[in-house]
Image: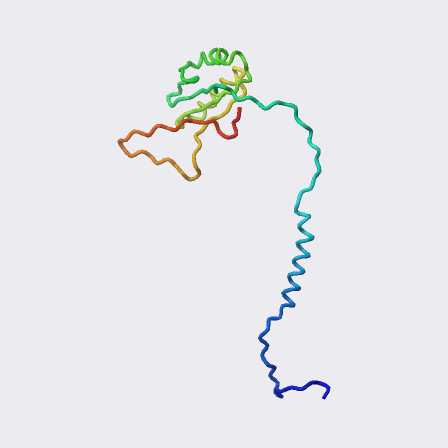
Length: 167
């Protein structure tokens, strides 16, 4: 017999317990080719010959100059209270007339935005354009608990310049 010998003469084929991996291999090879073609397209390869900089890094001030706006709208330059009319004169004295001095400006939470902008305009009118805003750094999601009724609020931690406000 040329067709082969069958042990079962019925129409049922015997069960095959082997996994046919040929379609799996075909799919994997197609995916491999797709990723090999797409991977170089996803990278940025721009050759740029950057010039060298001869500028020295900016020096940080030994003593930062803080201007604080308190809740009652009084101004403190460093630790000393100063009147708004004398702000320009005191800044000129403390900075030695250097208008490029960075001034770290901080304000109480209760200070109105309009009042805060007035202080910024005072600095701008005096010629001090390098103003860094100071805020408290807190961990994300860690809000300070409100003090219970009748208890005084805890003292605020020391303010530090914001990360983007490098001198």
